[in-house]
Image 1 (cartoon, rainbow, N blue to C red):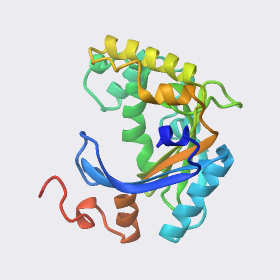
Image 2 (image 1 turned 90 degrees about the horizontal axis):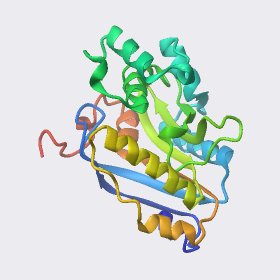
Image 3 (image 1 turned 120 degrees about the horizontal axis):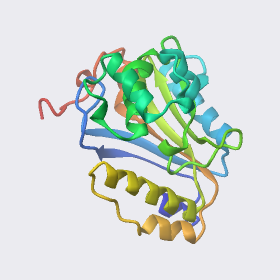
Image 4 (image 1 turned 180 degrees about the vertical axis):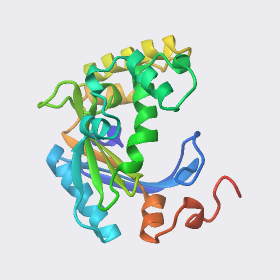
Length: 245
């Protein structure tokens, strides 16, 4: 879809099945339905407003609250996110029973993600939807750097009743910056013993030809249906989850 944007197609959306190998549980299934859109010429504020309005309409709720990632992290853990080293995050996670050993990972982002998913996410959007904004820049490879805080990027996620519903970006337009971020990510992947990702790809080529300013967002349709039906798991709203496929 980003490559289509570079061809001057204008604002676009699609709704369809996607597959992501990984987690399986109440809110996760390897195959699910996703709605994804790119709003050309929309800025960060417009992207947030559109997502809030859509969720409010689909779930009959009030408009979404907003909170920065760093603030949500601190509220749940009393940790100053950007002052914490990898070792400090590891020590906290072990002390609080998230994992058994501090050598679980050498990656700062792995520890942040672990703590966020285990201790932060469940407290988000309890009474009304909330948009978490300004993610650490290391967790937003395709988003622009925030003008208000260069440690963060203009990425946002929507949560309601502890369930992640959508993930959006004020899209990065600089292909050279994307390549630099990809190279840094590969260095970390190599340190972690993971396979490196290809540095040359068609997205980079398309972005170098020119990409219009836009906000892009992907929304988990099955999770929206689950919450709208007041169901407690995806199994109640999907015909066949992985457990009974």
